[in-house]
Length: 337
Image (cartoon, rainbow, N blue to C red; front, top):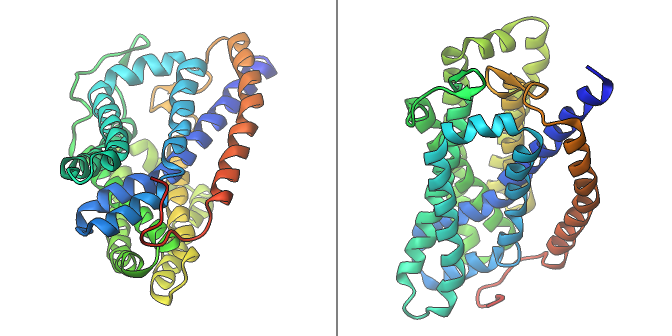
């Protein structure tokens, strides 16, 4: 294996991993607002909630496109295994995102007859979050592979563990949505979001604990990685940091500070993501295919990498600029529609 054969798959894995992390965080609060929608029955509150994400929500999905497209381009063998294994939750995820996006725009033009668009927005957001959790659970528990092809059934992903990860992601997105509302709104919406955020934080910590216990019990290779020395001493920093982030989020929700709860909830997501990476690296299709075995031809990876390295700074710069321009709180009655 040449140095290029070794380094290119690693670089692409980092790009895809970063894109997925950015998607989870940035689109997470969009989905979270939709999940929380039924808990805010007043139209004025719902308008304020949607206006808090109106300048950002569609741009946030750029990272999902980069993650999925990058997997197809850089690791076609993995793409050819993962997609057949997870077709059903993937299709449900994409359809739910379409419903959510259409409902977001049509809700404003359909007023005052927009009730069903509210339902579509909430349902699409909740189903999309749950489907993402099913995909995650299906990957973590492993995919049956034979001769480089998917060898399982269409419902192999449907297990109690995948259902747990689906529910956990719904709760997590709801938390990050609530802390976003604390940051970006005022009045009744902010006050209620603080109360909901405290309850959701406890729910998320319970879900993280259950997944963290269940995963090593169900997957021996993950248990071996986490609990052998000296790895355990280093990996234990992740749950310690998670506890610190949870405490910061709790204090922020009860102290009146708007930014701290959001940053702490983002930290919780990123720490959970780090834990998943630690558990599975270098596998891209656990536990049978690593990033080097799944990699495309180095010439193809290099060709696409040049384009990504040109466009990625532009996308990042625009994203930062967008969030800077629309910084500050969205007051009731203000908006972009």
